[in-house]
Length: 135
Image (cartoon, rainbow, N blue to C red; front, side, top):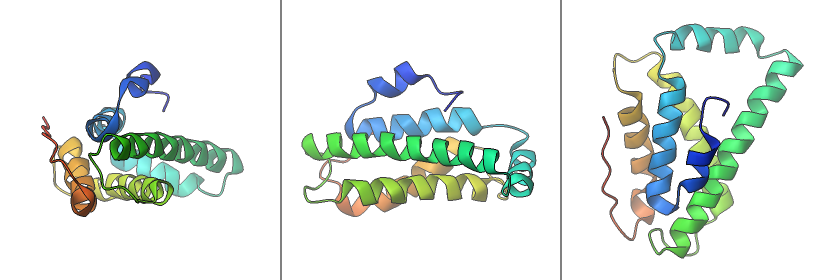
């Protein structure tokens, strides 16, 4: 979260906000050294300080997704009755797994990769179809 602009995050709203958040995440991890970072996380996973820092990042990501999902439901962009907490946990896990996956693929655009994964999960719950553009 350190690399993300918290003011920009707070401006995000609803369904478009979910994809705006993915854009911000993409910018924070789009690195030529992503493989090196993944390797470092693997070797440092047992360090309590590293685990606490990473867990804090994941929790913040979930909180942001939770807020955006609730807004999307209130805006009638996502179907009512969704378990926003569970979906936020799922999206957060999907983002983290997709970032890890991206490190091993021959793709060049992490924003598109994340957007495609999240779009697949949200598809059954959409009331409105977002206009999503990636670079």
